Image 1 (cartoon, helix red, strand yellow):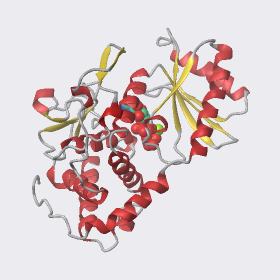
Image 2: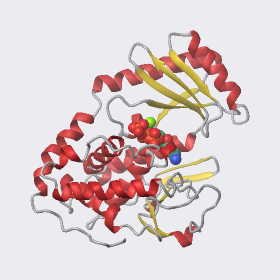
Image 3: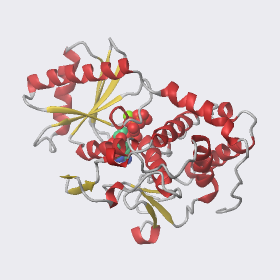
Length: 335
Ligand code: CTP
Ligand code: MG
């Protein structure tokens, strides 16, 4: 299957630049929406502080990593020392407090892999998930946000890919397809691999930011303002990049042997990671290394059925971009 037929890019691909940019721009949340998210965070923090003084809430995920489209849910991390052994109790108490205020749809999901409280603010219609001490997520959120500040093409590509994945039903980890986080890492890796490169490998550069969280040492270069011109020698436009991204995942990636790694800026072998066998439910059919929790394969949710669905969708996208007279409609057609 691999290298079966790498397509040669259609000559009129540039006609797609304007419509793709228009889709990207239509997905960006407004300043008003961002302000409402901030306000909600502040008022939630006040509520939490009545019970737990001097604690903080951190936004992570798409509302903080700059890959959030309009109307995204807010992911919030409640940092509370000493809470790790009684998260269920704390979440239940938190749910009680939120429910007694003006918040709706309050639900504590204490048995989930990451236990959370869900809620909705009736005034703004914004939904939130609050978890406890998921601090590595706050750090990987910063890494993604810093990458996005280097070259605007990352944010454009990731918005298009996320929009495609949601439209095509392949952004559902509980159905064995990939998380938004995994798709953004695929986009970062892809832009690190272009020649000339469009993105550097921040974890391979001088350390200007470092923290140790949950026994994981996280270190990378975060003075990204100094890298604003990094990708200027590569003038590929968004249409070429979207085309190449899907072509790579349809026909170029070596699923049998390769692991993509944003941490190293390259490809690792499955053998080197010992990701060649199924262990428990982890099958490693598509391998995406977490940049900090390096034993985490974000492709571990993918099973022998969903890998087929996923690869057929990559192939469909590549074919649509190559042959369809109106690819921007067809690409995002609901499945
Ligand atoms: N996350 C993680 N490990 C995972 C999945 C998610 O650390 N296996 C963290 C990341 O910090 C990620 C956040 O949880 O940014 C939210 O994940 P996800 O819902 O996949 O991404 P969002 O960026 O919030 O995307 P969406 O717009 O679809 O909500
Ligand atoms: Mg989210």
